[in-house]
Length: 342
Ligand SMILES: Cc1cc2nc3c(=O)[nH]c(=O)nc-3n(C[C@H](O)[C@H](O)[C@H](O)COP(=O)(O)OP(=O)(O)OC[C@H]3O[C@@H](n4cnc5c(N)ncnc54)[C@H](O)[C@@H]3O)c2cc1C
Image 1: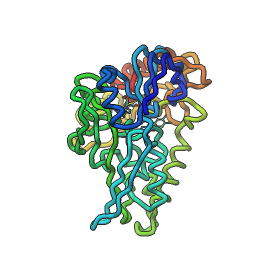
Image 2 (image 1 turned 180 degrees about the horizontal axis):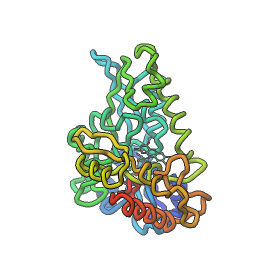
Image 3 (image 1 turned 60 degrees about the vertical axis):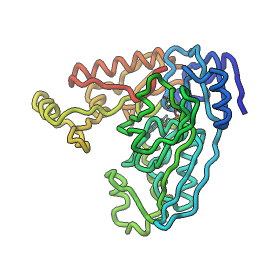
Image 4 (image 1 turned 120 degrees about the vertical axis):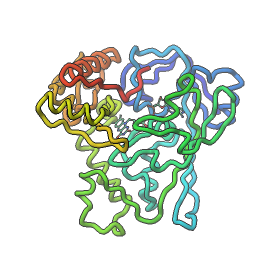
């Protein structure tokens, strides 16, 4: 079913809780609906949103069309000969809901992504990641609707060109060319805990892997997240506002030498150094920065929050600029936003 609303207030469909109105809001359910919208010529230039958990409406008004998929259907196949199970989830499925269902059914793969807000479509675009797992580690293929050809096609994991909070969906001829309709996720029925993230390793190092359950990891991940991140139901944010900057190892060494201090970072698969944006921001004293009702979250300075619920997009951008400038001045490093500016 397709529903259309004009001049809709979509603030409640985002986690930042900033003023957000759009010129036209279209909600649909099926690929047939998308084909209908394609024939009606409304897909080109439309902004597709998921759970609105990584969006920043900078001006409070988006004049164009906003699309949303209301399809929350999913299907779990029986295990194959290798104990693998395929979860096929429509774009509108809530990621954390799937994490919960998998954990309850003893299926391994999504547990470290527990607690991340948003929907499957957004997760596939953003390549969400937390506690040592990224969406790319579990996704087999993503089905997309091409708004130019009007065809629905599957893209393999490789064809999605996943990188750190990056994917093929962020490098198209125009934003929104490909609409994610569903994703196929491969899960394990055999124990496959991912304990690369140090605090998780520490919690579970004395328990034999075959005694661990995905539910145990999910619970631990949620408790770690709760201790650091704002609850989106209470305090508006879009999670980590900035990406962790990546510099060459030579540049990292030069920075340490020039500043005469250790700069924390970890080596990526390409031999570069991923710096901690949170550490850089903290070192610059940005925790006390405010811009109107926009503030820095005290237990995780990578997060900008709508502190009172009354902040505007303009204030968030002002604070973003203050932080970016402070880090640039102190370290010569350019922070780039993870949050998508609308
Ligand atoms: C408190 C909090 C904690 C967070 N923690 C994490 C974390 O640990 N790790 C992490 O990676 N992220 C985290 N995030 C960020 C956010 O939850 C993720 O980026 C999430 O995947 C965004 O999904 P969404 O459905 O909300 O997408 P939206 O924010 O609505 O959209 C994100 C992007 O995806 C596009 N999009 C959405 N759906 C579709 C679709 N069906 N087809 C095509 N394009 C689409 C949008 O156009 C936009 O470009 C956090 C956010 C919050 C508020």
